[in-house]
Image (cartoon, rainbow, N blue to C red; front, side, top):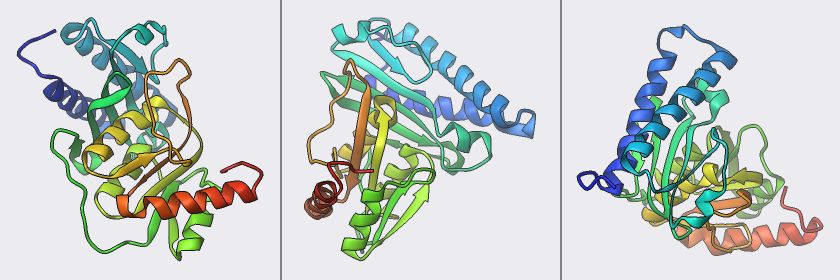
Length: 254
């Protein structure tokens, strides 16, 4: 382990550096659509892997863009990353894509960073605080697959739902106070949630499954069915309404 580079600094540097690489790949419009998305995924993944091989060769690794060898299950320290969360958004010129970097220690995020490169900001668990203020009365959801449970919760609370892209972008906009909560159902993977959950928890937000159970990482099965990120004072009400929906819909949340 490189003694001169702390876990926190490495996490943040990976997120910021990856964002710069991705913006460079997109610069000038030389690549488009699928080719642009593929290039972003491949080159960002290669850079992250090489950095970790040099600075943390003994740690485990899990990424959407790399084969999962499962040797990570024997490691206490595991990096869980998504070089481009929201590849479609990245490839089509939208701003709601993100870079996810998280160091998981014993199943929980120890350090995390979510970069929103097009907005010029990286949210870091080492220095983050959720914005407090009046409620927005909005819940952010998947732009492509808004879950029915979110619509039900919003209706019960007299709120509205708004759809945007990347999971990281959604969670960070809750942190910024643009939305009061982020509800997802229909499935994600650990690389979708590890960094956003790590940053959101560090900022003082509530993060859990929609049944209220805590989220753990570095599991053999990396699938996570659902997610709630919200202002802590709203968690009990949102979870109660989600339970009502589930009971009325045969145990499903979608």
